[in-house]
Length: 388
Image (cartoon, rainbow, N blue to C red; front, top):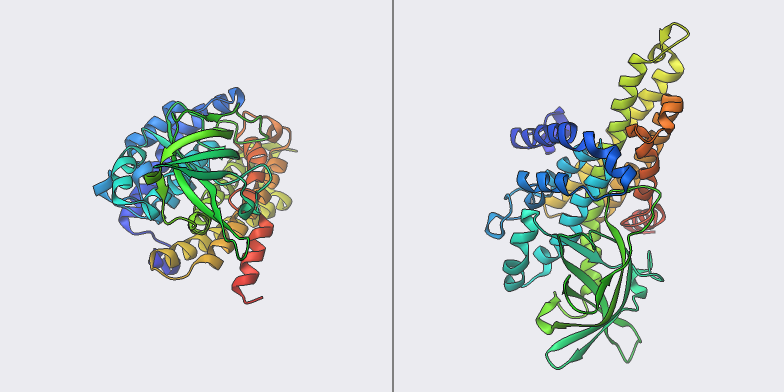
């Protein structure tokens, strides 16, 4: 990966993965994207194809059913999928970096053996239950509670905007909940607990009617006297919020990669259209107003890619990457949104038709500046990383 930053070439194993996923995106994902978007239907057949390719197991060791790769491999797959369908890309991102990764990072060996093989196979999905109706960016304001009752936890509360939480193949939701309060400071002890999807009292509400990501599964969740064993505690008691912040740091690199895919996909579609579309007797790409707009789009995508590559390199080398992950997420999401707007303008009326990829990117891209930490949160973290 570091070699790419200086020479512009990926190592063979990464390049082969990238090409394989790119071919899958073009031949399997793209042809059904408009249909699933229009129908607001979850693309089970596409997810099954990704599972067969091993994409859900990319960053996990073979001993847990994974592919023995790394987080950068996941990012490359997300970039290629993001070019053609953000709903599919976010299904993979959330299933791996938010769903399975907490179990891998913080689970006991028993928990890993019980859950990771099915999640790494892609035959089942897991969700990440952090956000609540009154606690989004201020996730420390968690109100969901988990109280001990003998050898069990009793969970009550609700979560909001949770991806991969209501599909027929969802098997697990990791939930943050208040498990105690420091009597001296009043500070909440927030823990994370594994909740199997079939647990009585756990309900995924009706799917949201969203602006975009229409083929992505997203639900509100409610927990009414949900009883799970105490051994379902994930990580140390009281460390759930801190552990999830670490997961979000990693996830921001993944979202940045997805965003770069969107930004590059908008470039690719615009170049193709500008070569084919004629106005006043000449291809519109020969007009400087169009060619310069596309050139700026390419510059955004290139810069955003370098940012997420850099953050991933720091992460994989074991160095502090929090600031760089926020930079990558900030730059990538803004590049996606800006390029989607420009691509829509270049396509004119066609860019406003949902059958066109750029139209879906225009609707889908806004959430990239909101989910997994808003732009404002990223600016706060970058400033904090500078000592401000």
